[in-house]
Image (cartoon, rainbow, N blue to C red; front, top):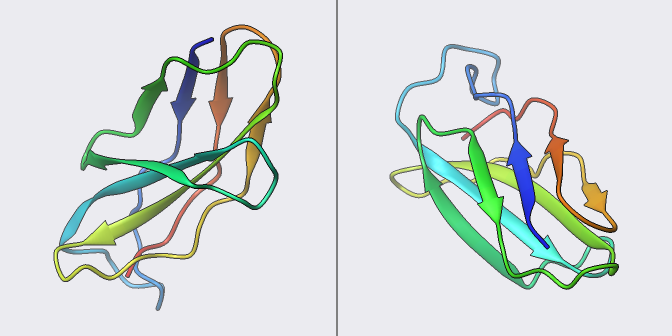
Length: 97
């Protein structure tokens, strides 16, 4: 199974100001809600990732967080999940660092 993930670009820091220094996003995956043992880093400004090799007809859960060069990490996004074949999953906004 393949899952195409898409999220909104980070534009503000945690204080609500203009974001500077965004390095990328960390996309987490797991097969239980709230438990994400797998992750991949995606360089900014990319806001998509295709996760391949997932088990068909098993529920898969995903969250994303932003990070800078230090690295400081944002809180994670809302969780999305998928059961079955290919589908695009959309995350809400994330604020960084």
